[in-house]
Amino acid sequence: MNTIPRPEYPRPDFQRGSYLNLNGAWAFAFDDDNRGEREGWNLPRHRLSGSILVPFCYQSEKSGIGDKTIHPVMWYRRGFTVPADMKGRRVFLRFGAVDFESRVYVNGRLAGTHRGGYTPFGFDITHLLVDGENDLCLRAEDQPDCSQPRGKQYWEEGLMGCWYTPVSGIWQSVWLEAAGDNSLLSAHVTPDFDRAKADVRLRLEKMPEADTRVLYELSLEGKKLLSGEVSAHDRTPGFSLDMRFGSRVDTVIAWTPEHPRLFDLKLSLVTPEGEQDEAATYFGMRKVEVKNGQVLLNNSPIYQRLILDQGYWPDTLLTPPSDEAIRADVQWIRDFGYNGVRKHQKIEDPRFYYWCDRLGLLVWGEVPSCYEYGPQTVQNLANTLADFICRDYNHPSIITWVPLNESWGVREIYTDRQQQAAARMLTQLCRSLDPIRLVSSNDGWEQTEADICALHDYAAEGEVIHRHFDSRERVEKTACDRRMSYAEGAQYTGREAFLITEYGGIAMTGKGAQEDMGGMHTWGYHDKVQDEEAFFARFASVTDAIRELDYCQGYCYTQLTDVMQEINGLLTPDRQPKVDVERFRSLNQNPKGL
Image 1 (cartoon, one colour):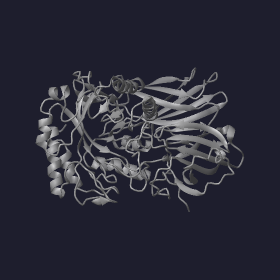
Image 2 (tube, rainbow, N blue to C red):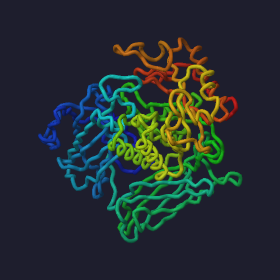
Image 3 (tube, rainbow, N blue to C red):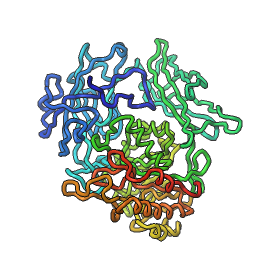
Image 4 (cartoon, rainbow, N blue to C red):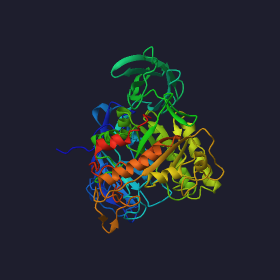
């Protein structure tokens, strides 16, 4: 019996009860001459000659193709039958992510289009359906275009530095779900920790008809806490939840990494004709802010021990091979003694954030970089960032947004006022859409104004770290090493929290990767250490040096896993530890108890 890959519901933070998973075997073909639209490949009668296992991209081995060459245009096709429980309702087709441009056809007719490789989209396909089997066809286009948010996807064939095999076409789950005449598009919950309240704001697909109501039920660990209903007079009805369920000592049941308590919220959209839609979400009561140079979580200082994670797998690339694999990665991070992760250059599968919520791991959410600057770059980054925030707003684990990294895509930002304006715009976009998280504007160097001063330093010795960061005032006025800390005209204001958000990157000879990959040498920072003892000596030296900086509020070590030619991970690509986990955890714990 064939097993459907990634069978779990793709959006546990916004889940409907009835859905049909469309992952599995699809027909597939490259269209290198870009003739498919002219020749009617979208029509059901056109047969695609190959096959692919969705949701794995054609470059991955798991897809059944494993072709690493560039094919800008590709076509997918499969049949489906609408389940009985969706009959008589409107049917929606959902895609978790398709890189980069999509044209979707149902029974030969255009259902809709989408641009953006990391964020979800979907269409009401009810009017396109027929009785019996339906034909679903997707044309995907992914040019080696550096105005697209690429992240670590290399824009040429092969590998380079710390850039890896790209991912094209479908790389997250595809599914069907249904609703009535109106539907819930989103449900954002904003915790107000100090007032012990949670504000809920819904977004409806259409203006509600008269006497439309929203019914809600709040529970914690299966215990019903309260329920109620509100009238929906417009497309954004809202209500407030009284969250005083704690003890006389602690009024609020808080979400923390040590105690990740989550509240479940069930929602129903009801008219006099009956229920139109239902969805379940969840949230945590937590507050994050910067005050007097410290990061506060729930009004208490927190020292962040983060690790950089690229989110690549050997056989599936950017697509996690299973839900169990995602959970295991989160658990590895905790086992190594970290309380957070900087998900680097990737908007991750929603279930990654789900497991961070459940297991208690802080997350920095980072937008994949473009690598050239222009109007299309700015538009692509803004759209991707806005969609990222909208999709993942309810995850309590996410505490910081990172719009830019190391001036990638804005290489002249130090003096270029236009690029500086783009960075400020992205920072303000975060704040306009999300009032409950922090922003690191251009993580690494040449920053514009934000909540965090985030610098990168891959020095190999602790004494060099000490020399680079001996004076916070000097560092923030000038540079810690080779790049200026702030862009020209921007400056430290006195309120930011300071973190070293990339360091380490220690590679070990003969551990976890071949020394030569088809003629390309493996890549890491500085010379490789020769054995585990040398690794721990270097790790302790640089990490202790950072922890001795009394103004520094945390660090981010590079990195969790080896990825292709980059061999500075704590785990091999197939998730085997390269060092003693307990010893590492002991060294990683801050001796001051921060």
